[in-house]
Length: 557
Image 1 (spheres, one colour):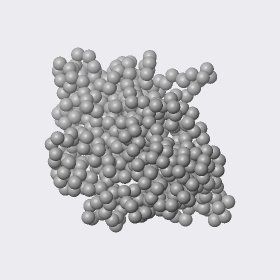
Image 2 (cartoon, one colour):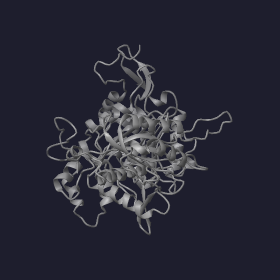
Image 3 (cartoon, one colour):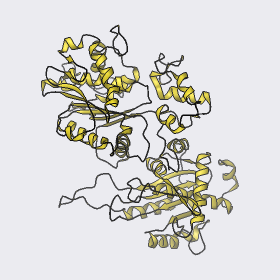
Image 4 (tube, helix red, strand yellow):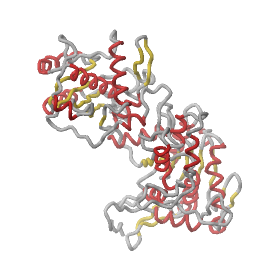
C-alpha cells in the first residue's frame, strides 16, 4: 500500500517518528547513572523527521547527507551518537508502507553487514561522540536486547560493528559503512587529511544507499574545510547551479545584529543560537510557547565575552555559531547579513543606477562570474539583476570530457536591455575589462540618456584596474562604510552575499583594494565589484543633483 498522504499541509512520510520512539525506549541519557532515557529535544526531533524523510511514491530515503551546525555545548555529539546506535540496531532501512499507509523499516543487518563509523581527524575528536555513545549503549538494556558487546574501542554487533576512525583515508577506502558521523568538519582540511576522508566516506555511503552526518561549528570562509564545501554544495542546489540532491543543511546562528558589547543583545543571540539547550529561565525562544530550560549555561557563556583574553572571532564562531570571516576578509558574513533587507522590493519605473563587472573564460580553473547589480536612487537598496556563474559540474561532451563553460553573452546583453526597459536608469558604471566592445555599444545606445556619466567621452566605462588606484580605493572605502554603518541595504541574494564575503583585502600604495583569495580561486567576487560600481554611481548621481527632492527626503540618508 502506498503512503496514505498528508492529513495536514506540509506533512511528509518519515521514519523519524519511529527513530525518536526507539531512542527513548532503548538509549540511556549520557552523564547519568540512573538509567534515565535519552529524550531528544523538540529541535532534535525536527531534525530527525527531516533526516529520515521518505519519498511519498518510491518510499526511498530523501536525505543521504546532512550537516547539523550548532554552537559548542549544544549537544551535537551525543545526538549524533544516538543516531549512530539507531543506524546500527533499529529498523531504519525503508521497507515500504504498512496496511495503514504508514512507513515501515527493517534493520541494516537484514540486507548486509552494518558498519557504523564515528569519524574525526584526531582520536580526541572521535571521543566527543564515542564516549557518550558508549554510555548510551551501556546504560540500559540495549546491549542485552540487541546482543551487543560494548568494548572501550569498538561495539561488536551480532553482525557488524560500531567503531571510531581517524583521517587515514587509505584505510577506509572501500569500507562499506552504512552510516558515518563526521565531527567538527570545520577543522577538516586538505592538510590534515580531512577532505580526503570525507570524500571517501561519502563515496562509500553512496555505494550502498547509506548516509552520513557532519556536526561542525561555524566554519571560517576561505579555509577550504569540509564544512565550508558542504555548505557551498547545498547553496548551489538552492541556487539551481547544481543538480545534486539529498543534502540537508541545518545551520542556526545568532542574528547578525547581535552586539557582543551589549549584554541584553548578547543573551538574546546566545539563546537563539543554543535553542532548546539554553538554560535560560524563560526557556527556549524557538517555540511558542517557549520550551523548558535546557543545559547550556547562557549566563556562564556570556561571561566568556567579557574575558579580554578570548578572541572575538573565536567567540562568534564557537558560541554564537556565526560564520565570520577569513583573517584578510574585506567584510564579515554577519556584517553582510545584517545589511540585507528582504522586505524592500524594487518596482518597475523606479529610478535606479547600474553596476556591471564581466568576464569571459579562463585558460584554467573556474571562469570568473559576470554580474549586473542595480541600486535604487531613493534609498540605496542594492538588488541583483543577474549573476552568471560557472556551474559546479560541467556537462560532459561526446568525448567524455567536460564542456568548457563561457558566460552566456546573449543572455547578459538581453538583461541590460530589459533593465533599461523596466526601470528609469539614470546611471550605469561598467568595468570594461574583456567587454570593451559591448561597453562601447552600451555607451552609444544609452549614453545620451544617462543623467550621471563616468566621463564625457565614456559615460559608462569605469575601470576597476589599472592606473586609477586612488579612485578605486575611495569607491571601496565608501561602499564598505555604507554597508557597515547601515547606509545601504541589499536583497540578500545568495550570489551577492557570497561574493561580498569572498572578497579579500589587498594593500596597495593608494590604500586597500579587494581581490579573490588567489588568482585561481573558485570563490568569485564579481557581484561585489558590480555592487561597488552601482553604489559609486549612486553617490555621483546624488552629488550631481540627479535625485529628486521628494526621493531624497523619502530615502535613508
